[in-house]
Image (cartoon, rainbow, N blue to C red; front, side, top):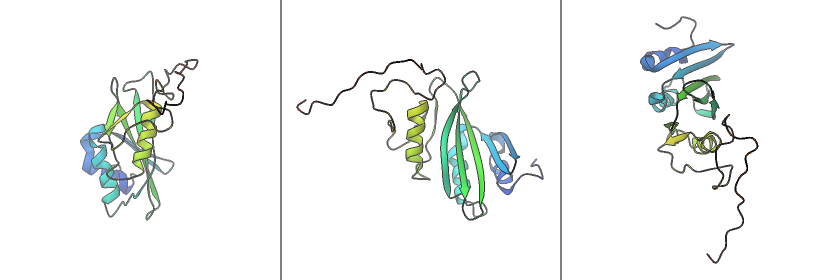
Length: 166
């Protein structure tokens, strides 16, 4: 049952996705919800399309490596409603060995770049992404540098210019 202190956003999420909500709270005026990865696309669509919410801006998308915990990763989304000046943070736990979550590029064009950056730095794949490849690092780079088990003293292969005759 919804807490009377919950915002309109948290109440709607609880009503629509209650079985998939792992946790939700409002702390210092910041709504946060943790949901299973199976509903992230539909949840994002609700946030964007519901006329009482209108979260029309995907501010950020990143991940957290919780290294010693299960599941290991959390994909974190920050949404903003410009019309209502409200924000919500959505977290999606993602496990190993193949961390993967649905792409939000059909809903927000900026998700293309944010998902590529998250893939590059953490190795989390985004299903149905139109162009999932490295964004910040060169293609031959080995590993994902924001993972906590990335070797700090590791060496990367030297890559020279491509031979134009080849």
